[in-house]
Amino acid sequence: MCGIVGYIGDRQAAPILLEGLKKLEYRGYDSAGVAVYDGDKINVVKTKGRLSILEEKLKGGSNLSGTMGIGHTRWATHGAPSDINSHPHTSLSGNIAVVHNGIIENYLKLRDDLAEKGYKFVSETDTEVIAHLVDYYYKGDLVDALIKAINRIEGSYALGIICKERPDEIVAVRKDSPLIVGLGDQENFIASDIPAILEYTRNIYLLEDNEVVLLKKDDVKIYNLNKEEIKKEVFTVQWDVSAAEKGGYEHFMIKEICEQPKAVRDTVFPRIKEGKIVLDDIKLTKEEIDDIKKIYIVACGTAYYAGIVGKYIIEKLARIPVEADVASEFRYRNPIVDENTLVIIISQSGETADTLAALREARRKGARVLSVVNVVGSSIARESDDVLYTWAGPEIAVASTKAYSTQLNAMYLIALHIALIKGTITQEEADKVIEALKQLPEKIQHILDNKEKIQYFASQYFRSKDIFFLGRGLDYAVALEGSLKLKEISYIHSEAYAAGELKHGTIALIEDGTLVVAVATQEHLFEKMLSNIKEVKARGAVVLAIAQEGNTEIEKEADYVIYIPKTDPLLTSSLTVIPLQLFAYYVAVAKGCDVDKPRNLAKSVTVE
Image (cartoon, rainbow, N blue to C red):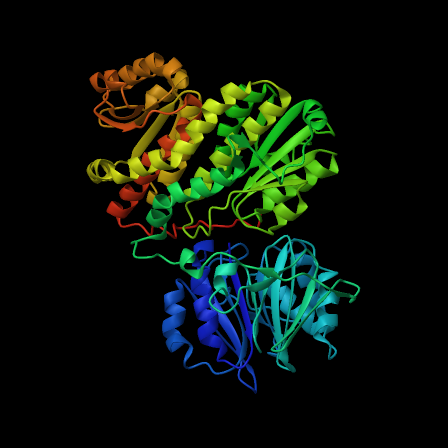
């Protein structure tokens, strides 16, 4: 959520800032702005609403001159979306301009202190406090002023700051909110994420918490809070810039849905060598695995639902008790965690605030932490004991699709790895699952090649007011994700229920014409799901069923059936989720929703 871009060099800054902010639109925002130094003063232009409004105001950047500037897309926390509350914020003198991602928890106290010193505030934001605080401490050295300011700040932040009196400098710092430095030729950048600057450079610094950056066009220095210089390794981005473009698709979301065969292949195939699971980045020994008494899987949103699938698979194969937990709950309930606990953290961005805090809580209590992340070098990856990268490539649409699929497959690999080392399954049993894993990309592609039936069904039911998803076992786990995907992008109220819970209240919500999506791919639960379908049909529901090929008995009960290819029962979630994603996408398109940037949502949730 929120996006920061900063540029210093010889080129005009405004067009670069606008292009960079466009690449960060997926993070979610409700207003945007830029501040550019023109050789005399800092000019700030900002507006509520979409980036296109700001771009029109700036004529694409052509009417805002200057070769140094900062830009921002804001997701409102303190103060409603408005022109005044938009970033950048400036000191009253106009000497300092600030962009900020995160939340300053003690901003009210700081605001009162600064007001007593004569500072006046024009916005409702916590960020304006930073501009005045840096201005208060500025005595000619911008780095010194920033360090003194952040020593008084409590909370999370990524900051980019420019100063009229230091026309050849940008300073920046991060704590619990992502920020990178891009290294160019006679130009340098800051950004919240790689796509913003990938057009200009592949060489970046990955900043750690409380590392302060001083950028000039021909130099970058990084300091700790004692103003001691830090030497860092340059990280070179390997993926191509075209991976972050639409490539002819109408939306990023459908592009990323269609990229899932490749994404799953990239996650799985390099980890299978000569028929064996090889996870080189996971250093757990047999002795350490035997000592594990409990596993927590901790995540938020879609990643949490991947974790629920992981719970089923790990318990089934490795016979270790597993608890899937929402990160924001885990960190505040004093979880029972010790050195015999393995905590598996799942996050696409590797920067999710609650998940990162849960990781730190787990490590503080002595647990070993294994993370499943997509973004190489992210905070969660760097702070974990072991990392399994999903290698899904950039995911731009706010609603996650290919990241979820690769997280599922990462959980399969981890479960097999632990079970084989622990000896709870034989190599022969593992071989059957591994062979089925290798066939998943082809089977996902088969579903995608026949997506027109799903598109047609969506076109008939996009006006639904309430939609219910039912499933049992692994099917319930994937129904949760299907329901989330639909409500995220179509704004239709939907709920997922364990089908066995129907009689405990849920069935009261079923009436004539209610759409129910029934997931029925688990052979040992198939007959029970047929009974549940009969129950909702008797109350007037319209049923879309998802079943494995060959289970044609379901056609007698459901109104419509989508079949997935046969696979190992443990792996059905990887196939079942594809029609659920497509259904959500086509419903949202039919409703005219902004599919890639749904209202009020952000891609990377870096505040609580």
